[in-house]
Amino acid sequence: MVGAALAFAVMGAIIKQVSAWHSAFEIVFYRGLVSALLVGGWVALTGRSVRTGRPGLHATRSLIGTTAMACWFSTFGALPLATSVTLNYTSPLFIALAVAAAGWWHGRRAPMRGLLYLAIAASFAGVLMILRPAIEQDQAGVLMIGLLSGMLAALVYLQVRRLSQLGEPDWVVVFWFAVTNVLFGAVAATLQGWHPVQLRNLAPLLLIGTLASVGQMMMTRAFGRGRTLLTANLQYLGVIFATVIGWTVFDDRFEWIELAGIALIVASGAVATRVSSAASAAEAAPARRCASA
Image (tube, rainbow, N blue to C red; front, side, top):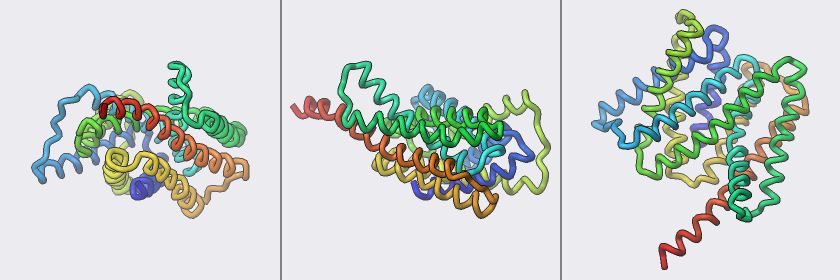
């Protein structure tokens, strides 16, 4: 997951540069095209297959994931790199919110319920701390789109975990996601209007697709085979990577309230992930006891 976080942070930096010449939909298209060619070529050379018996699950995961990606990519041109990455990494907080809502609906007492509520409240306090400077700079709308990407990403992580538990290979998940990127991006970019690819942008577009493929494979394997709690927390290294890149490459500067908001979101996300993991373990325990009986 450390490698995936670094790959996505560098990819975000390149997208931020390319956003001056191409729309988010175009970048989604090129990202998917390069990824589909790379993964498809690797599958063909190694004698593997991208066939699946669960097309519906792949379609749902890929469509939601592509929508989340388009929302996320659209924030890079307007927001500092670290802010864009942080908003996308609010996904564990939405997962925690879903866990709390499910527990209330079914009348279950969630483990560490008070801590869960505190993490959710603190995370949204962090969002408000980032939002205040954004409102002053007329960027509130972009920030909301970034939050939407985090909410949709929460659904994607759950679906990726489910596909991995069902035995779907990493490359199958990544390949069909890339194909959906191509179709979605092509339609949306056609409706919005295409921009010609200049020679200076060719290498960055290829690099975006390559980093996305590598990062996606790493992330899919990490969530599918690694320890979910550790994996989810390691993804926050991406915020640190993005902050360093933003400072050194783009000369991003933050008010203290923005840095405090980012730190609060990261800390709350780590706590929420821990509580959500404990809740999942508590729900699984009765099933294990019944099975052993």
